[in-house]
Amino acid sequence: MTTITTDLPSTVDETLAACPQFRIVVIGKSGVGKSSLIKHIFNVSDEDIEISHDRAGKADITYGHTSEKNIRFILHDSLGFEPGTEDNWKIVEKFLRQKSAASSPLQDRIHAIWLCIETPRTGSRLQETSDEKLLKLADTLNIPAIAVFTKYDILVNEHYQKAQEVSTSESEIDRISEENAGGYFNERIKDFQDSTQVPCVRVSTDDDYPEDERLESLKKLVDVTRQCLHPVERELWVLWATAQQVSANQKVLRSISEGSKKYWMNLGMSTAFDDHALINCVARIHKDILKVWNFNDPLNLLSGVDFFAQMVQLVEPVLNEYEATIRFDDRLSHYSDIMALARAVGSTFAQFMGAAGISIVAIKYLYGKYQRIPLTARYLGTYIVDLTLILHQIFTHTLHMDPPRPVSVEIISGMVASHKDLHSKVIHQRVHAMTSGNVTAHFETEIADLIKEFLKIES
Ligand SMILES: Nc1nc2c(ncn2[C@@H]2O[C@H](COP(=O)(O)OP(=O)(O)OP(=O)(O)O)[C@@H](O)[C@H]2O)c(=O)[nH]1
Ligand SMILES: [Mg+2]
Image 1 (cartoon, rainbow, N blue to C red):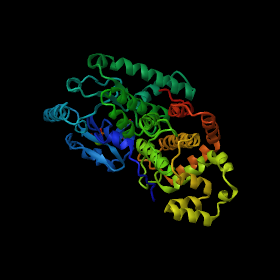
Image 2: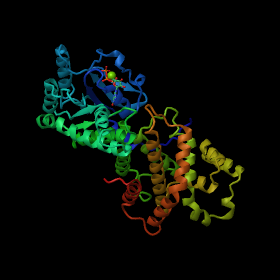
Image 3: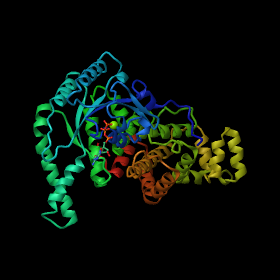
């Protein structure tokens, strides 16, 4: 797919230049569910990161697994410390010490550790001195660590069988088993939590576990991980939001904060875009938002000209009033006019937009110089809200699929169409109201608030 281009530098690339990949260590016994967790959180397959349990016993913590499907993380996979693997402790300890020195660059350091432990069940042991030793070391080295209790669904299933003895209603059995499993879990991990003081998160990646509960458990892990990141390393907040593939809200909040650093600031009234064609500004905003979402998009559909043309078409009604002020001759959108304009601006994309049915007024407006006028604020503001809501819908739609979940032409078109039917009119009216008088100095905050209001995100 031909992708859109822009000559403006990317803010997200600037933020992530010092540390482009989130380095995570995942430790746990063979079969505990490490690879399954990684697949779901980072939206990759076993083959993508060359890890599978067929290689049990061969996990080498010093090896950084990366994936082309998600370039924003590096995984260090390690077995736990079962009896007879004392050498492994020494290897892990040496590696953690090496990779945590405050003197080394942020990108070389370990940013978080997930210690995976199987969720305790009736009759199973939980406390392992080696686990506690590891968490103590992480604390000493100032590496954020989280205890991740895997296969939580098995515990719920145990309680499901008990709940069947007290109720016959399916929904009641589900409710009772979730509640009792939760109570049992909290009781079982209490001593561990008290002695280690690390956050404990229970997760499941099992297909048979209700989807809502499964996704909630994974989102919780993503949110807790984010909360553990040191506030002094704020670029890690953006990086984590970009790397993880479970929480849409983190993507939205970080694309807002990245946008607000430069290109969204005083939207329509800032000098950041002076001397550039408006289309370059829109393309920059579009591509920077995409960088934070970091979709599994091997065909570059979301940065491709087709989707960009769909977006331009969606936002086109914003130009209606402007169109009315243009002379009739200028409004003609004959194919020959578009070809002449395309030749004038030297763009095959302009031809493409013409062929896609976008009016010559819109094309002229986009290929004209960026102007500091309320219409520009309205256009860019509407574009940002529409794009963010559509990406949110694509993301949450694909979240229901098994990883890896690449985007497709059908999914994108479907989400654009449903957004157009359900939300775009209201959004256009709301942004129009914000820009009908003087545009406020912090218009970008109003735009961000509108996005959060629609998505019911509290920040
Ligand atoms: N019921 C249930 N099974 C799971 C869950 N997560 C993983 N499994 C199963 O547990 C087995 C081992 O999972 P892996 O993800 O390969 O475990 P691992 O920790 O990577 O194992 P090694 O690579 O050998 O160290 C597989 O059969 C998974 O399907 C879960 O949340 N619930
Ligand atoms: Mg594995």
